[in-house]
Length: 396
Image (cartoon, rainbow, N blue to C red; front, side, top):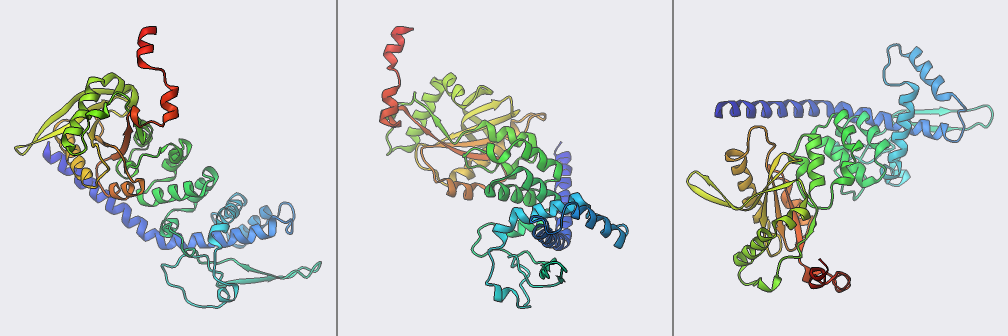
């Protein structure tokens, strides 16, 4: 059994190395192709949108290109229109450039500088007999990073043109586009996988709970289920905060745990009906050491164990290491062969979303962090709008 697991790990490692090598080898070619397509898209856009070329021009140009370069692939009329979409989709972002005078200087650029540069590598001056219109068509352009842009534009250059077009068609918000580009570049999604995520609106369904699911759950359907199964905040109105003493953190967590266990049906209704309670203070022995998980559930939709660690204070980065250990123990000693890897959730009183996203991203096990509120912490106007529990009992 252990040997088979070793072989599986070896296959996974070699496969990942091959994929990374292939992507690295293709990245240089891909950069040149994207630069060419962007430049051609610019040229086509500027000449076709204002009617200068006339109806059917793109189709005619494509046909003539095939005659000039027999066997040429990728320059059908449909693809040239996609190049126009590629340019128009990114021109407002990529054209945040240097002053025009600087751009026209033929100077060398560092390879890691990705802003769109109008260094002229090929200039066509076209003159018409009607209006003597003269244009500089910059067909070969170098895509360079816009100044002060926080997005990693190396990701932009690592994914293929087909990926870009799918993203432009389906993701309209700039943040959503950056999200899908980053995931394609770092998770090696093929176009079919990307289409699944776009169709299912992975970006929109992520929820606001900070997690590392996209890094740790490779299966597209499982990932979508995971992001939809958890919220960033839960309302636990059956916890009595008067029993909680901030000076004794361990005792506080036990009070919260006991309140949840005593109201386990309510808790399951809060987190989702697909959860089945396995136990609290769930004991696992690893190499003679005992580990105790605060709350352990099984989620039928995810087909996975879900470990929940309770914290009554603010999120701390050290909690993730503890949870990662628990998930490793669950996967090694408790998880059944047909089940998916275990998922961990830290449930705490407060957190800094940005800090949590930074802290959780490099862990190998799927984890997220959520917060909870009690009834006493609800805004006054909300509490007043809720019916009194004693009155409800009388009515029932």
